[in-house]
Length: 373
Image 1 (cartoon, rainbow, N blue to C red):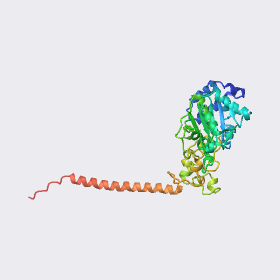
Image 2: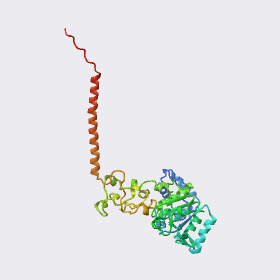
Image 3: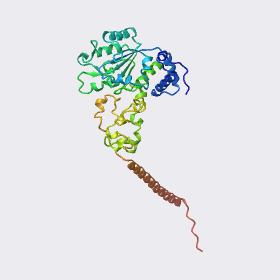
């Protein structure tokens, strides 16, 4: 891998970010985006030369968990990199301004930079009774989303609530909460980053991809980026070998739990969930829920509050070894198959030899009978 020759962006130099730290950040972004090493230089060069695009972050019917997840991340160091590579003009949790000043700043962005800024939406959008269940500055979340997101060059829905309504949309949904794509249909350049909360590494990677290639990454049927949601968690899990060997946790705190056995029987939804949790992880890349001892609840799956609960009920039978069998049973089963195959081959050889002998006898002419004198 050849290190990029570009310098550190001026906005990062002011914060004392070294070239080594900048290259390390670009390398982590390339890895998260599942790009070959040769793209490290492309990303570094693009970020060094890119104009700082404007970003506005809207919070609606939410718990602020996605904002907290983004701001408390140090790998990648969002506060030193992504925040400074973008002109972050509006975010209720971050900005010093409040009230009329804050709302004037948002309106100025929409008015002066229409079609140029990136909008990030956190939280569901209530639609019942005219959307009165969430208002900011006297305006409903629905009206704000229509006004701001319709004029953005790209829209990013972070977290389960912004994607498909999340917890607040689950039955009975008295506020009529919807995700951004349903509340404001037809938005251009919309990308969904499901998860409860979203993983900040993926959000940073999406922003870096946009700054580098001027377009959003490849998406799946739910408009989620394939680099983050394209692989089944079960296939990436470090407990997969225990599943294949038939070693399962039978009860919380039992010996299997202490040894890190598979959590399938405890309701883990990993075999039918897609996300890059096992590889990107959390807390500076040190761990993720399954490694910490809790089954996956498929929080990055569509409408997971309704479709994946009860969270501690095991899934139906999953293809492959391991489901309700032990390693010994698997071993004896394979041995039995091998013995059966060998027996079949022996019988086949005997039959084939007899058929061959009979055929040869039929084709051999009888010797002429001797004449009597």
